[in-house]
Length: 436
Image 1: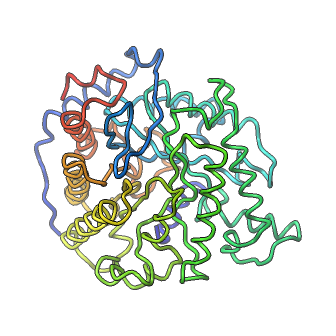
Image 2 (image 1 turned 180 degrees about the vertical axis):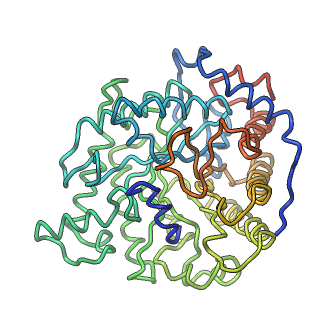
């Protein structure tokens, strides 16, 4: 999203809302259930996962519709490099499983930064790669599928800026502009090599190449792409077409998405009626045009009203969120014929109270649930972001620790339960079902 201090470097170089005072049965269940951290369940021993497929506007698993209730933990790989921090990853994935969550979005990149996966073009750190191996294997053990993002539009963990620096340092860069990432042939070659290396990596724990592992939900080309030097959108469109085709050439089994924020482009009438403000149509991205590309299987939308507007109250944000989500679900149903995942959302804990945050989160989950109940294209949500205790250096003003006794985590437990009731139980941890 715009600035967000690069989601406070993701953070490592990195009114009156309604309040629901009764936490409810699901909250009690969550508090008790999350307390038994050492209890072993059968799904931890051996989990058989099927590839997620697409049928029109719906995700499918084993022939049944699959709607997502999940989260973001961008930090899983970097916290798996060192032995002392690795337990945090297992704790987070175990917590997600206990909440009935099914998908986690995380970074499969760290370019030129501390403990970098790729230290220079085509040069990889095996220790960092083994960390990513661990994340994927551990997710599989807990029945969690991973949506893996391949590069950052922002500066955090290298991003497109690092690729441009590499090309410039090697004397082959066409421009020092960050947006040359999208049009410089040398940089495109760097990134294609990265894609190929990731997709064909053989996991040292599972023995599976990443492209053959159903624990991977799909590939996200880039987190929040923007190419502001070409507001027409042509440059980014060409890049998406080329990179999505390249991924599909190597990996025909996994789903591919772009990583869009959801802004309507300069020629779309919805730029005037749905976009947050005028600036949103001049970023070089175009939700409909980009998402129509044939090799893009599903599309994404982010939701950060407090960063997109200025001087509005929480009631206005709720109205915008509803309009924003329903508009994109309508697009998925009537224009794209593809699933729409709301792959990041949050409301700052700095400027908003817990009741206000809970109201917005509940609004988002309610709309997603109604979409699932009606078999519409709104295919699920991934909240930004979940952490475990003791991770102050990774948190931001959206961070949520599921094990803490606050009202928000219970919303996601409730969402798991009601999705299970209308779509069947999709999580491998069947023991959770008794609490719904």
